Each structure stands twice: as C-alpha cells, then as structure tokens.
Length: 287
Image (cartoon, rainbow, N blue to C red; front, side, top):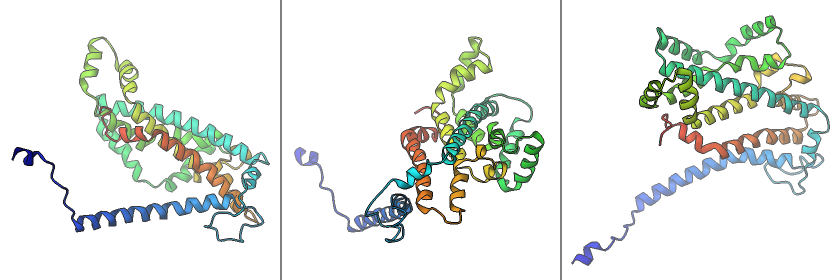
C-alpha cells in the first residue's frame, strides 16, 4: 500500500489544455514570422546584384548573392564619414547622459532638500511634451550659441541627462538598502563618496541598461541631426541613408545594405547585454 502511494501519478492528458497551448504557440510563431519577414527581405535585397534586382520577388532569397552593394557604400568617403560622426556623437551623448542622469537620479532618490519631489515630477512631466514642439526653440538656442552644423549642436541637447534616464535610475536607486549608506556615513563618507564607492559599483545593471538605451537612441536619431546638420562632417548614418533614398535613381541594394549595417550592431549589443537589462527591471540591484 505504501509503495502504491509513493508511485508517481501518470500525467493526465487534457485535450482542451493541449489545444490552448498549441494555439498560443501558433500565435507566437505567427508573430515571429511576421516580424522577421521585413528583416529577411532587407537582407535578401542587400545581397542581390543591381542588374537582377527586380527579376525575382523582393522577399525571395537571391539566386546569385553578392556583396557589391556593401562595397559600394565604402567607395566614397560619405558613408565612412557618417559612421565616424555617428560614433562620436553616440559616445558623447551616452557618456554625458549616464553621468548626469545617475547623479541627478541619486540626488532625487536619496538627498533631502526643499521642493525635491515637486521638481522631480515637474521635470518628469516634460516627457508628455512632443519633441517636435521644442525643435524650433531648440534650433534658435543652438543658432545663438553658434552650434549649427557642428557636432556639439547635434549632441549638446542630449548630453546633460533626460527625464526618462533620470526616472529609470531613480527608481533603481530607491531600492538600495539604507543600511549601506548609514554604515558608510558612520565611517565618515560623504554623499559623493557613497555615490562613487558604494552606489555605482552595485548599479552595473542599470548603468548597462542606460548605456544601451541611450546609445541606441543616439544611433537611430534622425530628425534633429537632419535639422541642425547639413555639412558632410555633421551627417550621421540615418541622414546618409535617407540621402540615398532621395536620389534621382534610388539605389535600393545600397539602401538595404546600409540598413543592415545600422541594425546589426544594435542586435549584437542587445544579445550580449540582455541579462543586465532584465536585472535592472527588478529596480533593486539585488537578486
């Protein structure tokens, strides 16, 4: 009798549950296919020769793949210069946002001063303002500073932190145990020492997340660089790709090759650092 009670029970088959699971998997697979078709089409077009571009449907793989569309991008100096400009702007914006956003977030999360919460929520409310509304005033400010057609004009408005970055880091810092800070204060550490020696080393997930989000936004930024730039030295990748599509005879193969070149680094960065993004969503820094 004891042996029968300890014997594992056979799993019962439930047709309704099985059909439900099959339906859910089918929806997920369908959504994945629909999402991947544009990317696969982009890759297929970038590998098709110029002469045989329209001989087969766009969504079918090329019968004679070639990399001539990729090599054509680097024949001149325009695309190479655009890559260098984009990287410089991305590094400057990412470094500035991570530094200033984390400092401001720590002040809003841990330091006590009059009007702290009012100032934070007023600053956060600017997220509701569409970015196109501030384009003209921002352009006039850049013009008065003499930053039109300069790299500082492209990167300047985004260097000193953003409401989203400050909000994300603040929510992360709110989960820190106060015992760590109190112990450091007993040892004579000040606010800056606590922030630099204790908070930042534990904040690796949120720092990596901020770096990824900021770098991707800067890498994909199009409207502001298009308005504030114009010279070859201030043309970023997104603007360079748009100039290819605006030509008299659009080079579809080169456009798709440039799009692949822009998208692949973002995918690689996300796949490498996705565990830090997941960890930062916990909003505490401690598992």
